[in-house]
Length: 239
Length: 239
DNA sequence: GTCCATGGATTTGTCGGACAACTGATGACT
DNA sequence: AGTCATCAGTTGTCCGACAAATCCATGGAC
Image 1 (cartoon, rainbow over the protein chains, first blue to last red):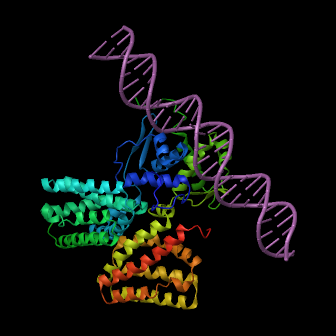
Image 2 (image 1 turned 180 degrees about the vertical axis):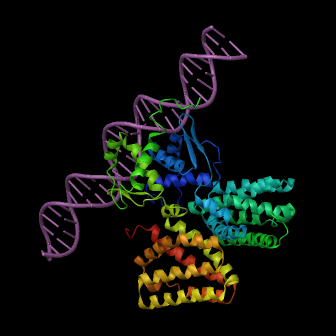
Image 3 (image 1 turned 30 degrees about the vertical axis):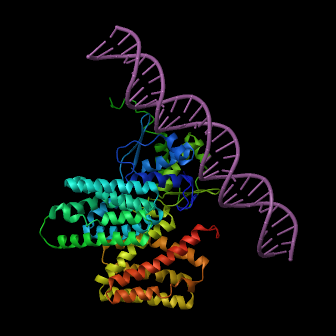
């Protein structure tokens, strides 16, 4: 189970740092939602094949950065999805288009890596989000659609198995939701779908075809970026 | 219920948090100058009247905020007097490959945008850095080469006119220099040039050809990434 | 004299177990 | 029904042991 050949080399550094990355990955990827309770320290230690003290040091680090909160006698809970340093504020000050352009670059690279490194578990998460997205699209539920769409992209990035990428993307999430809201305010839900671009991306990742995945991601993100540019350049909607 | 009793409990919170405060106080107050070595974990435990594991958790927290650095077999040292902000903390701990992969995504996108938005001034900066890079290459000056190379890429990103992208890339700079150093330690300077990939990228930006610029950037970064992966996955050079 | 390897001492990294402190819920008693 | 004691579960802290990495002094080869 723990043998994942194509993954990052084991023992890159101290075990604690690896444990921190792994736990943070579960949070930033959305696998552990805000407010949820983590497995007990003993269970985590068994799952990661390390001692409880190692898990404790990792949890303490994340608790000190604001991502986790440990309550004695009760358990450890997810407090936030991204650290609350000045990085969030800087993002808020940046323009939507600037954020989207950076996201574009990251996600195209993530799509390529995801096609190379995805596990079956990654694929299941991607498919699950995609199914939710389809359902919301069929029922024309805007808010459900936005949530599922972001979850889909987050699952793709998670499949790239790059902690830094994952965290960066997670901090973009709120801005991306705002992008979607901006688009939804102007256009009908059906126009945003991108004519199955998401299905194509998922299929490419399933087929482990990096170039195809990168093309699918680039095409979709490009078209959305064009829409966003046109929309934001016209002084139509104040907001 | 939560009314604080007249006798404030000696334990304001978990012992570890108190230990963190105490250690941080020693650093921020200057009692422990930057670069100095801390007492051993056992000595600290005796001085604070806590167990070594408690001291360890506290040290780990401060290490992750950038104030301390623990070196196995050597000791724990003061790394900075104030916590480093933003992404610096996260980047320092991330693997070189992770950073490079994110950089890859950003710079390919930046190359495309640069081809669309570059001004004559941007072009001049790019050409100037490229000339310095060529000169350093001809004279086989490693350090000058690394500096000029990073300056070139930074100029390309600047030409994209996306403040967020620029800031993000700037925070990568130190990690990129380390990537270059890793490569230079293994290979000859001539092998790194990439057979004129930089000239091709500059030419594409000059010609305002986004797709050609993106292709040039992707090709170059991909080849370097492959070298880096091969180098970092083999335990050949002990760093 | 200079250089290297070599082995011991030192220090952090990880492990496993034990008990205390606290929480939440269950069940007994009034 | 309400109140309280009890108990299992979880985090907090402590302890001891060994592994891994580093530092340094010692000594031999040249």
